[in-house]
Length: 373
Image (cartoon, rainbow, N blue to C red; front, side, top):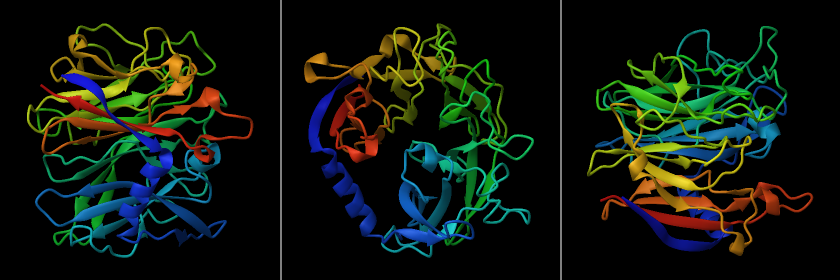
């Protein structure tokens, strides 16, 4: 397996333009009416899933009255969806995602969420087919305490738990019925802001899944900055207790509070993990470099250290500060060459000027090719 730079796109506007064009063709509404203040919320694209061998497409969107990727937004996210039965040429009316059962409704869409008190949102990764035909959607949600208030014992940016939404297609592909698996929570001795941005992969045994969780040591930098893993044997309905995500030989590695993703290669059948691994204990979200890829051992449930490759890392000569981020990436597999394509915005928190935010500034968009041999 080798990794190298495929090309560097221009300003982030090019990537945004391409994404916006793809969504405009299928007419995603810009906003939706909601039965709580402020009465109307903005919609942003989340994930799209195409059912193998069928013309059925599921499209998820995030509703919030605030900007995406902000503290205000994270407390108000909720999911809406549409389906298409003609390969995405047209979509039906958008609707709120609500778990099956008489006790659930738009104000109580899934078991742990009561709008507008807390929220839920998809994780960062793409939705992938699974062996039983269900649709697995990893999510994170703000936990509520016993008083029904946001649980945030350390008072930091977020405190979330994770779970997997389980979708079942109607016989004609006209709708999806939703259920929710068991919540996965990290203790305060494992993370000071919960376990979130879950990445999942179905293992060789049908119905057996691995979940890797983002954690944080913000406010307690002596805490080891690990990713955490747990296993389901029943298609994401229940999960084992989380343990540190490590190398196949048991050696532990450090990783910042950042997303990660698994991909099974269509030709080799091997699973690969993409994420950040740091040589020393990370400090909350940083450093988010280098970005690496490694083969995942399905027997030991760890990374094969000898296969680890650096995709990109900080370059001071480019002007990168110590807070440059090689994170929030997307991954696809080239159907012709079999290479993985990884795209990300080269954001740098250390380069922000007073009053600037990640969303208010344009960043270079990087595109990498990871060849699998």
